[in-house]
Image (cartoon, rainbow, N blue to C red; front, side, top):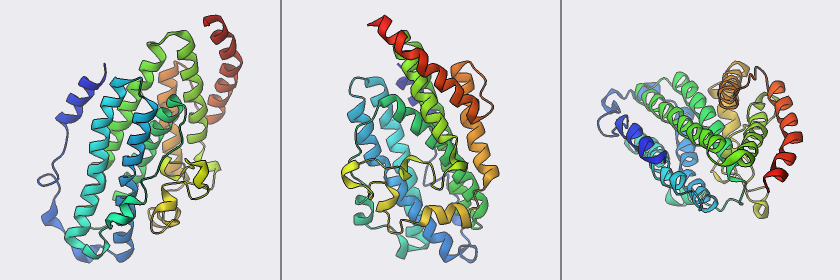
Length: 288
């Protein structure tokens, strides 16, 4: 099991909201109204860890190890929402999300292949780490800069934990399952490393997850300002091609190590995926 080790490692570096955030360094002259509003939107977005956890537990009922890890992931993600709301409560109380606003992002996600979902969230954590690092640079108020740096580190650790479960999928369940895992990881990897080619931000909270609710079936469609994310990325934190390139490079680097291959570009990964697609069916048939 991976859960006991992951619990210990994350417990060892867990930060305390009361003592590890430099609340006394607040400088109100360095916080604009626009900056404060984005903090509210991020707080609501982080609250969506709740329906994501419900999805993970539903779709991984046969995997108690991974489901137990969700207790750590869920706690830390909700803590991100909480620390952002605490910042607003102290310094911009009129912007604290209401319970109704928070509850609105809790809706059911359609079932999806668990390995593809795992890869999607691995990439999402990498992307969020980079978003928050850039947000920390954009903000000028010292306390919120420290908060974004703190939660960015958490997202990087979460990506590392998901990667451990991805490695386990490749190694511990037989050749057929391993090949299916490779196909799932490469398929989602091609999508998530290609964000520079799409008009939308490729993060789990910005993807469609419930056909019956379409097109109002993304987390971002449920927040008070559905268009805030693109504005935040493009015009506020300026998450440009260089930053997108960092995300893509990180995804490709980790997949190269995971698959024991070399993916320098998305095209390399896509060629690997196509070759794997042709070979997976015979492997599965043989194992049946």
